[in-house]
Image (cartoon, rainbow over all chains, first blue to last red; front, side):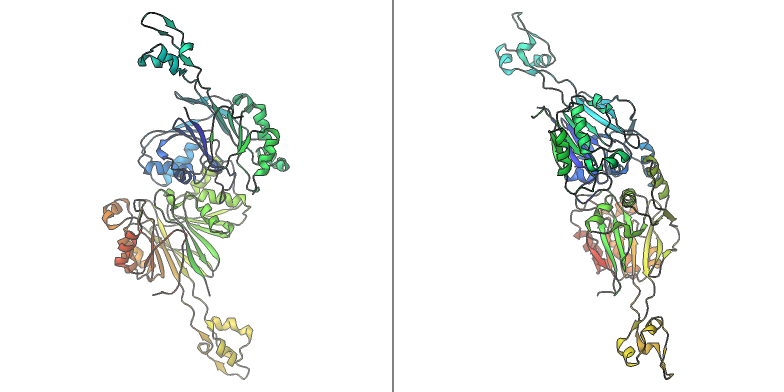
Length: 309
Length: 309
């Protein structure tokens, strides 16, 4: 059974509070870690959850507002102190290299490992990373400065062995991997057993979209169409929609509308303004548009799975 | 009764841990706040202690290693978000302006308030700030990059009114402030009453020295001679003195030796290496040289007062 989960490390917009840290999420795809944004204090949050820092090899930054990246320098330096040698891949629209370089220059230090910088095009969606399990596609967002969301989409999965028929036809072990990629099996007596007789359909390839920070922006829907789990910022309640408009943020209702528009299966909202001590108002407003909404509560883990409804 | 206290917000060297944040201290002198270093997460620590951020107008940075300043950008941005308009005075050896500017540029933002940058000379001790209550003197330290400690010294305090004799000679209220600055009093009948008869000696002017990061460096002693409270880094135990030497840090014993050499009245040690889960070893070693030592335990407040021994 493959794993695909999102651990919420922080969900506060602007200034962190006593109970809410700035945006950061750890995406776990079959024990491969991807860090999404890195607000101040993220390295402490990761420790709190006993995450092995060095297992993170890819960090995605949505944009260069402080609440989304100020924990990055400290995290990179801690990884260095801990003896990191393997490459770190950084994805970001905007010049994050300049920022890291100025810090390294000031401390007259260097990192023992290499950072591979990937400048993300914030105007056009594109494939920015892939391995055997997942591909990551950028999602152009609309905010005050260049800003990108990220869509994580599992690659097509192998067909699943049908233990009953495989035993029945005495398929040898060495042939099982061939079954997984769709091949038939020819018995010793020359009979061809169709693959469909020996395997079950693949599990569906699941997807997760991270969309923050952004105003309600229709073109997002086309990129994330049918996404299994959508994280969309919901900084404000409807009453403050003027403020959302002015600051190029979204309301909780608009997050719900994006879930509807993109035909998402499930929505979590975050990046809450500090003005709301009770987040249920945001939840209620989003649910009034899209029922399957939850709050991206700090410390919670959300599994990406087939629609649980 | 005047107040002079040091709140320890963090004491970890290098990487922060779950229980120990990076260096930061809040110095309170008669309700005027001074921030000493600003490791990652300092703004959260200040909130934890219910400190009103905007009351901090002076921030002193010892040097530009990440564990001493990475919380600064976030703190300055939060102050801006909260509507700060008054000037912020920054003291630092090295070019901290370049760092702040590159962050502001990346976020295409500006601060509504002015930062007044003061580049501290790390080679020669000098007065870098004073007001009616306190003067701050830089302490050249010896570390891998330009690094400065800071000596906070209260100004001479007014003489204290002797309520008994003032009543006896019927000194009018409007004359009391003149007594405090040393003037005599002439009665209505023309008799001169000596100031010493009407007042008590001033309370002593107290001092606090912050010395981190540094190797054991003799010239410090002359600058901080007779200091009431000394914070000196004690990154390592004696067994790791070679490591201390190599990294230009101090051992706990050396911190004790500096307290002896400078004739300090009391010592607190901090900036502990993460390799010591039990800090009592460091305490014991320092106390073997200088008895009146305490650990700069995170969350503790130390009052600077006349020698409590």
